[in-house]
Structure formats: structure tokens, C-alpha cells
Image (cartoon, rainbow, N blue to C red; front, side, top):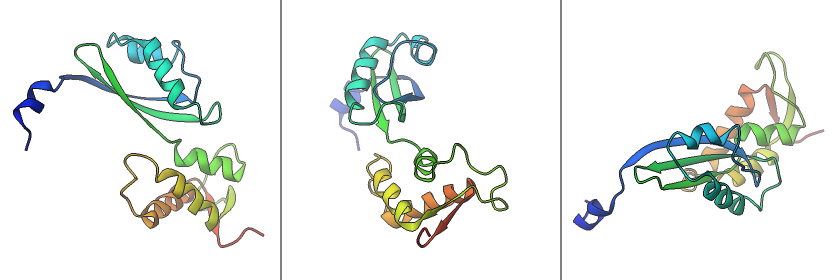
Length: 155
């Protein structure tokens, strides 16, 4: 139950924006201007904060950002780790998944790689309370949909 102070200090939300931006490379331009500009958000402030938060990642790592825009032209944002498909492509060395998953195998991946990807994804805010086994099953499902076969050990 919310207290009266919490209700009075809540800021009305104008929009929730989801964008994918390369780590450490946010700059006002093609991708961010249309998304943030229409809500009159300070793009330079976002770029500085985002680049500072993602400097530990390798450049050009796609980061998913959820920006909450408030009616007083302020914002908050959360940064998620790269998508599972990006990790799978990096681990297997393929450019894209199979055009016919289930029929054509694009690549193979060991269970150990799946476990490592799941450990990385566990740091995401929405996954931190999920059991590691569930995250592993999700990674395996994504791999199957991309035509990547999971094997016990790579030969």
C-alpha cells in the first residue's frame, strides 16, 4: 500500500521508450533524435549518462535501454545486457541464424557456453530473481529457434 508522501511525489509518466544503442557510443543522431526529441528530453544528458554506465562493455555491443520519460521533461533509464541472440552469434561465430531452424543446423554450441550466457543474463534486472536453470532453458530455446544445436561437448 502506498503512503501519501509516495503518491504526492510520484511524477506522471509521459512515455516508455525502448531503444538499442551500441555500448559507449550513444550520440544525438539518427537513432536517438526521433525517439527522445519528440518527448523534449535532454539528449546530451542521456548520452553522457549512458556512455558512462556502459564503458565497461566492448564498443559496438548492442545494449537495450528502457527510458521512462516524465511530463516534466526529465527521464530515468535502465540498461539491460545484450540480447541472447547476440551472445549466441558471438559464441558460434555466425552472422545470422539458420533460415530453416529445425531442418538446417547453422552451428553447434556446448552446454558450457549456454551456462556462461545464462550467468551473464542473470545480471539483468528482470532476470536476477530467476533460477539459473530457467535462464538456461530460455537460452536453449533461443538457440533452437536460430538453428543452433546444443551439444554436450564440442568436438
